[in-house]
Length: 169
Image 1 (cartoon, rainbow, N blue to C red):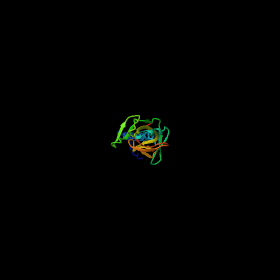
Image 2 (tube, one colour):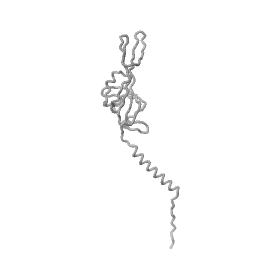
Image 3 (tube, rainbow, N blue to C red):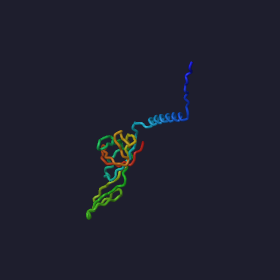
Image 4 (cartoon, rainbow, N blue to C red):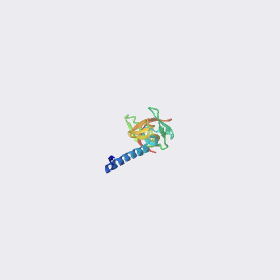
């Protein structure tokens, strides 16, 4: 009888490295898939509104639904941390016709000048969204620029906000 010659495979160092590398790659894919989920999470968008009528502050209510003006998409709800900053008062000098701004609070009373009380408002909006590779998305539709502006409307107010930060809640 003829003996068949069998070749025995020996595992060398290079084979072990390739197998370990393949296992590490598979494990990293599994870990990344479990960490990065597509489920939206709660975030807080902090904003500031500059040069708005001071009386407008009375129309910002915590819990009001905030929508994006252009698309009427729901953005989120106002939180209860709305604050009014120092007033900016603009008046026209009747003699010279030039506009002068003063920064003080509360408004002075004067019969000679016409005062218009202006202020800054800061606050935050709770939103549901995801951070993806190319930015922050609200409701997987609306890309929000962390340093941009946004025209919003609520039940009681319409304003342009400047986004100052986006933070996880």
